[in-house]
Image (cartoon, rainbow, N blue to C red; front, side):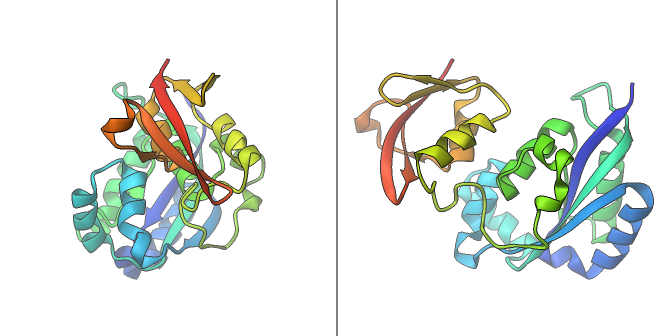
Amino acid sequence: MKREELHLFLIWERGRYKEKRILNDIEQNFSLLKIVNVFWEKKDFKTNLSRFYGKKLKKSYKKEKSTGTGAFTVALVLDKGAARHQKGNKNAKMVQFKVKYRQWTGGGHLVHASDCAAEANENLLFLFGFTADELKKSYARLPDFHDRGLLAEYGFADEKAFARTLQKMPFEVKVAPHDEYKCPKPLLLARFLNAQKRSWIFGRNKYRVKIAGKWKNIRLTRG
């Protein structure tokens, strides 16, 4: 079965010497919706990589040295005939072209691509704070240049902004008494919220998030 899927390709700084060739090829094989130039502060790059990929900081340091810490390019694309592998629900075409572009840039990992619709949604939330469904309705809301960091990198403006972000999660988040938030993937929720793990002396599942410039203590549990 085939259907229309929103995806993204990401060309890290050290892969951008092949950017023109890659973007031309993307345009020939996908519906290219938007190209965004993204910039992260160098001091935040390692932490952002850790949140984006869900890896430990030591591994992110190695990744950071590989990718470079300068501006990188994100291409938002539409695959109008998305086919999948049987295993992992992956988009076969996205996997094929990711491998191709990595070969063009030396065989490393200088090009990232969303392998499935769920990963695309997660990537877009982290990078821009929009869900895939929101961008399908209006991809023009993405700027040409984005320098705001990852989702919640600097916390939330207020409680309403925090609540809106919870509603964007790719799973249901149940709000319980005493600032407890239950969901199927509490560790992923912590990454989305940029929640900082508190010391074990405060108890299990204790985190804090920054709202309106102040730290708020919360619990993230499975449920």
